[in-house]
Image (cartoon, rainbow, N blue to C red; front, side, top):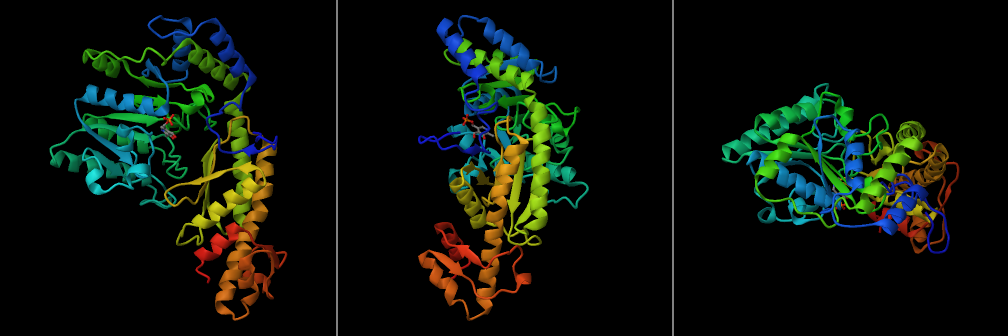
Amino acid sequence: MYDENGQRYLDCINNVAHVGHCHPDVVKAGAEQMGLLNTNTRFLHDNLVLYAQRLQATLPDKLSVCYFVNSGSEANDLALRLAWQFTGNKDIITLENAYHGHVSSLIDISPYKFHQLSDAEQSQFVHVAPSPDVYRGKYRADRPDAAAAYADEVKDIIEKVHIKGHKIAAFIAESLQSCGGQVIPPVGYFQQVAEHVRKAGGVFIADEVQVGFGRVGSRFWAFQLQGDDFVPDIVTMGKPIGNGHPMSCVVTTREVAEAFLSSGMEYLNEYFGGNPVSCAVGLAVLDVIEKEDLQGNALRVGQYLTNVLEKQKEKHPLIGDIRGRGLFVGVELVKDRVKLTPATAEAQEVIYKLKEQHVLLSADGPHRNVLKFKPPLCFTTEDADLVVEKLDPILTGICLLAAAVLRMRSEVSCCYFLHSRAGGSVRLPKFNAKDICCTQTHSIQTSPGYGRLLKQYQLP
Ligand SMILES: Cc1ncc(COP(=O)(O)O)c(C=O)c1O
């Protein structure tokens, strides 16, 4: 990416520009179709049919009916309507820290947003299951049955819902939680949840808005990481589908679609959803993924990125966990690898420092301490090296600062450092190299970011 002054940035976060910013094939396809015809979908256009066929070929056979909409939020909202109509039930189970969109029906099922509301403002029909996070969650990697334990939590919720006299319409989850902290659910979790939910009359909605279209490398869809024996009832898509063009889609089974149709409530989205330009763009995105083997690239470069980050983990105690699939990778920063104390300010400092060096990364998760890698799929091994090359000294600086602060707490000779709060460079008093994990130098630069960190360590 380039800013208004022509400064180049390495984009490690933009999962919308899936095949690369302004990919010429996508731009050309959209412009050509726009020059030819764009119309509402009351007039059936070949592009719509061709796109639906191409998309369906990437999915399990059962998922055979597509609805075209214009944003991830619209897709999830429609998915809820399908579930409500098909099941005749009302209640929804969602995951802790989940985000599914910005419209009111989705704020209701997005704890990432609604946790800020009072209990009275939260929907009585929405129930929150623990995030299947085997690093920091309720059941961790040392539990061989973590998938079953997390699925049983859903089963317990269903039982409580029934006691209240309510019934489950759907369980909704991102196939890999992104805003929730780059969480990779244990294999088998979705199958077991689906069994409990379907038994209770509900459906399983997989939100692939962030993680679909080859990002996870080994499979085209992230829900497929759970195994071929798992097929959701409804899949929602967005962001990468149009490489930035507002387009999205809901795919479901014939049974669900027929129940929706039988409501008599016509599905009316004929002006923009699935218009010929959007479908031309969508087709071009699928072509580029195939032609440039971007799914294969996600697998190879994702593995390379994970390996180089693992080496950073050996070097920097601040890195507690590295998890990912393909080019969807999370680096969780902690102050203590046993207590897992979130290193929130440190994560912000990393983001801030990287941006100064023209690398764009973000931090998310409930503690905002998980560095999120989800770059366009044309990311290269050189890009991975570049970001890690810049990350390494930043982590060293933070370690050095943390060690300095710890030492200052026990020594009177801290005056040098406290002076530094005003800015400028700091000379730290003699250090025992063993105290400081990664130091080659005893001199550091202060910055507003370090100022924030010092505040966190509660220094005056
Ligand atoms: C997982 C997930 N679902 C749905 C949405 C909503 O998509 P949109 O912003 O296109 O409405 C988002 C947006 O960030 C998302 O991350």
